[in-house]
Length: 368
Image 1: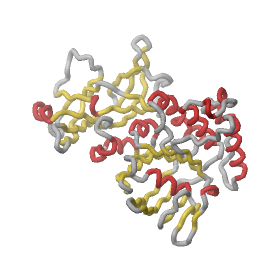
Image 2 (image 1 turned 120 degrees about the vertical axis):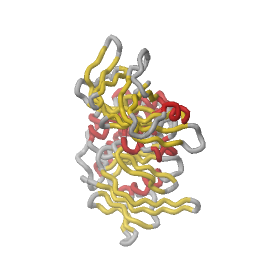
Image 3 (image 1 turned 90 degrees about the horizontal axis):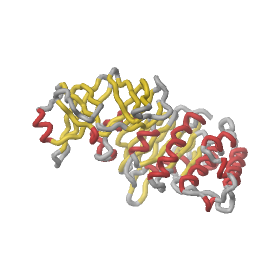
Image 4 (image 1 turned 30 degrees about the vertical axis):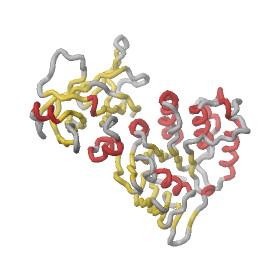
């Protein structure tokens, strides 16, 4: 099945919570359902999968109608061509890894409508599962369990992949190990994915689009870069992690100094070497507001290598604090700086003023 959009007209009610969503999601790449815990993300995902019947509304995937309260349509979960993976791997403990994968293959064969079959060998290779095939579930680490669970979900040949905070139970080290696998899957298997998370770093690395959900309502919906940049969403993205996403083109590497040189709209940006990024390749970068300082004249004698000329686009004071967020336009992008109000006054910053953005750190998120 091929679908271009997922239509969501959903109202779900609990005694102390109401979820109301009216959106169309583009089914291409990864769409993140992002927001604080308790905002309704998992409830919405369960409604899409068929495990939560809305009080009223309509859910359609392309031309397939999955739920319609007006006509009484409610396709059961096992007949919806979706693959749902929760935080817990939920593997069968009495089977080894190969047995868990084989179970998924049988389910795929029993489905009436699936995409072109996904071969087991391709899934095993994509997730590096070969060394684990004869292992029992109890002998797997948390990260290994999630890789196996992901492989099992893929082998059901879903038309839509639903991932409900798959990394929430992992520590930072195991999370960093599995993120590259998650990043590679949508392109390798061409399965549109809806990814639930409350972690902005996962959004920055994985998502093409973001739907921000809080208190049961959609707060924003758009391209990842535009959502991450928005100052009015800082309550959800977090002050410490607030920043922007930009795309740079790889110019060259300096193996001796372990640096990668990037082109950012005609300006050169340097960062720690990005392995596997060949010249002319586009990469997604995250620049946190806390890593940007501002100067009104080009400074000299600094250890900071990235000094980019720009123009102040906007200054927003943070309520009840001595902090301001400054957006600096640098040709085709905007950089975000988090500075004190005292600095704004000392530098006499105002919209339209020419400044220099001093970028202390740049994080590589993914290949373009």
